[in-house]
Image (tube, rainbow, N blue to C red):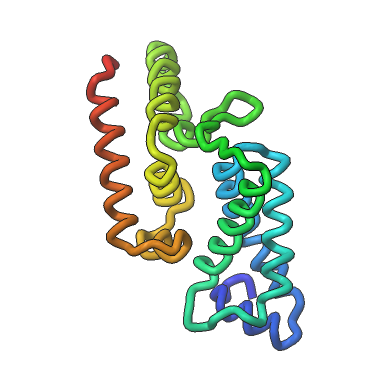
Length: 189
């Protein structure tokens, strides 16, 4: 069952095999949590939103459109749940990319796990700079870049999740990358 496609697991669950939902939760919990964390910038709130997302999936799984991808559907639910939270909160902390330990969610994915000692100081400077640069990007560019690299989503999946045309998503991605390159080009490594 663990090797089954997401869509097959949904079918199994709807036919009464309750364990298949557990497989879906195991498969998507971490990635949905990470997505929610980046969206709201708070670990505890991201945990709550992630739980709420899976409750919504469980309650609405019978309405899942089998002609679509489950991955896209669950991301749309997570995105909408984040937006609902942010609307209630009335402030959007998108520029917060560090967790409680001071680790940068975006930069850590590009960092070498075993840098040389002289690289450590340069990377710290670069990490701080990259964090500032990403924080300066418009929110829609930031989200597309993070969804593309962190969540490993295709442009089509991002388009479906954000309910925007694929050309709009590609344009935001391209503009975000160009901005990052321009700012990083001015940085002395």
